[in-house]
Length: 250
Length: 384
Image 1 (cartoon, rainbow over the protein chains, first blue to last red):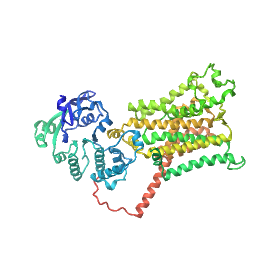
Image 2: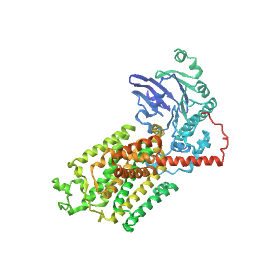
Image 3: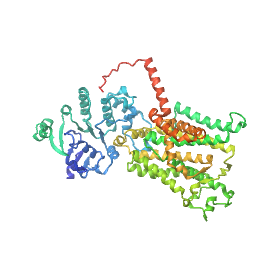
Image 4: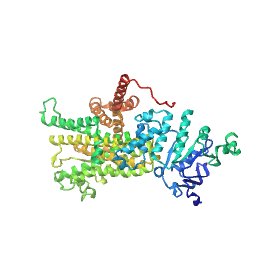
């Protein structure tokens, strides 16, 4: 099985995870190629968030392989190590550091040495300031640079969190419901932003919003009861009778 | 690099506080030594010890605020680190007594002669030297904090569970130090000190010097705390306080950050305890009492957690109140302390300093708005 993992960016094979007997993930297999953008959809309780937890080290699978870049076994590492390998995550509920300014939020996320002594003596360099400005430009928060993150609107917090992901310069971005609570305009802009990011990095987006998924225009994986139900273009999966049954049959 | 780091901790507000503390370090001892006792500005003996005690408590509160206010670790056992620093200093002072004890043994302190010790226990070696004792004042609390924190933070014990085990830690030490077999004076503790660095501890000059040393230590720790909290590390600490798991997911090993600040804080608490003992003249196991640690939490809450000036103000205010109450209305003190905590929690959640600071900030913002009305934002605002 391991040979298939080679050349892939992320490789999940037959992953199982139960919580008190409830099979949250039940034989999930998924392969993501380098540079690919993938949308993951599925009804509530399909295991989308648990899958993200397993990839980022928050939850350990009971059985199964989770391999990054064809060689690293992610089940052996914790959240901080996995983040430093280049897997960034945006949460469903926007979580930014509310008592820090927008710029400080980005500075904390910037790729740099993460040890306590390194940060104790750290002096912010010109290059880092420039990078922060660049990201602020991308996420359209330049005017909010010195605002406390707590005072941002919901949509702005979502963008700040995406900006923090960019600052980490990850090779793989896991984005959980990025447009929840956004207006249509914001949703369209977020889709454009993610497409731009996907040119250089691999992205996995979990989303309920079908208009948004259509706008992304990428391969879709449908999860149901902890495993993959269907995979393909959005049109193909939405005409799949099994998918229709899961979404509409109940 | 270190200088740059320390200079990063300075700004106008910090400089003002540092200057104030240093002024206290000079003025109070001068008023004590230079003025005749009948002068109204003369600071009497008992007041020197009292003010010195307040400053030690202020340093303890500062160290507690560093972990609680900036990293969200509510320690209900910081008194343990304070007491350990105090014991290290107490052991040095005991060894300075020499043959002047009641039993006149040149090596063994009185309580050991009384308990039929034949020779000095191994852990008392070295405490006849001041530099060794001074080192132990920071190393012993630091080592305990390191071991405790290593296990607690690695196992991701947080919140109220962590608070409870810090409380258990200080209680366990209280029971241990009560035992005579511990070799540290049992429930009587260490007392009857004579000299420190060759100067008699009770002499006015020594008292003045100890007071000045305490104020200097407070100023130095304030400066270090300021530099730490303004560094990038300080920002990570606040990030841990506000969203611990988010901090992990951007790649910071939260347990290492907590361990760093926890050990640093324990060392500062140890220094506070070490300066407390020669001014009070005794150290006994009651310093490990969990109630002491909880009182320290109240000082920080009253002054304002998450500000560095707050704990200093809070410790001095509350202890001043305690001194007044316990002499004027002794039976009401505990009620007053309880009421104070309730009032602060309900009406001043940011504490005295935090509330004043917020008031000034809002005032200056209102002024700024009055002077220059906000320009219409050129960018479309995303909806709430």
